[in-house]
Length: 450
Image (cartoon, rainbow, N blue to C red; front, side, top):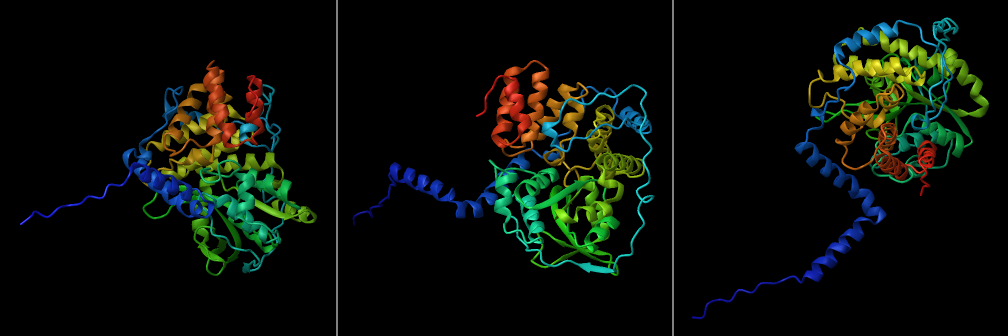
């Protein structure tokens, strides 16, 4: 009996190469890429985070000898009035050299936010209609919520239109859209007006909604057994009987309002300095400003929010205390009081190391809120800028985060590393070609971009 012959089918190498090229081509087709890219990105991130747990990366300011003492110093500094300076309503990456203040100057007394406003009774329940819901595409929370908010005012567009402007060259990988960028879009690409402020509260949300203005807020999001991250949603109504807001959420909400408790909004909104964006027709600007009261003035608003954060920092504990000190620093950056801001951030980072590892640590913080960079830069703490940038970038699966590259480039230049500065600034420009601050800095270095 002859032995049975075994036949093996050998796939020619050129066929394997052709299949690979065909698969790559198909993957990059927009309809397929839109559906699969986020799954690939998530898988890559999960593998990376499993091998290098991101919550274990801890930034400690190099130039602060005693971080516990920093908390005491920051508290004492916070109790000293600071000079009020003009605030430019531009993005952090475009910040100019800090304005000079006179030694010994004191702040103009700021009235209580309730002293100039007579509260108007509002209904027990309001639910605005007319918002067109969109489920966000990958990393498209900001653009999706902006387009939903605009739809209330009959704007004819979607999250792809807003994304093309807000995330011009890295639509999939950009980690955050800032509130002031949303305002820029509204002011430059629509017939509507918009304003962003910080330090909001639940009563303000109710007053705005009762007057017919949906409110976009940025907040923390803590999904079960997952790391903390940032998120936008739209406050579209409230119900006093159940103590709930109605929100449109691009991640979880259908095309009807989604109820969420007052307590949950209050807790997670604080993670982002209680920031909010209001969109309105230009002819209704006086109405919006009347509702905002003294908070229509940005200097008043930032100072109020800084004082509020200080109060919270001395009463909260744990992660909430970390967010309070961080908010304190952010508001002082807006006020260009960089020394006090740096001390507040020192206090926040000192507390960060004591937050339990795992889902509790907000290690993505610098993806969204980049205030520590200018605070340390404008106080001459260039190595801290570089170290913080490294800690931030090591936990990102791709070389994104334009603001981080911008500030690291600025710090490298200050330390005499011209080549390193140009490399980082070019990368920031690649990520956001519209950033005038980055382009101006490149020109100062003799680099024409592109």
